[in-house]
Length: 126
Image 1 (tube, rainbow, N blue to C red):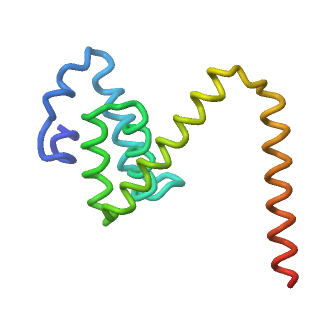
Image 2: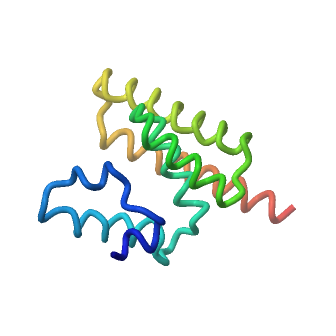
């Protein structure tokens, strides 16, 4: 069985996935986690840590931290990843709770990005 060859076992939690979703779920996990994608394995692990922390999932947090450690992510980098996820969730709560207009937010963000690019270009010219 492919999953056992890849992981050394079939994790018990994967056996709880109802058919016909089992094979599909393994394929999704395999291809995104272990497959060659635009993101490196290290980057994917850090994304996983951030999302797991943001959704408060102890299972995913443990898995993705272990995955990140396999890619030599330091404890300081893991802490920073969790802090960034926390900051994103914090501001998302503010934006959603205060029903900030999405179009206005997009326009302001684009203006901020343009301002930063202009500053970087000016600094490069100096």
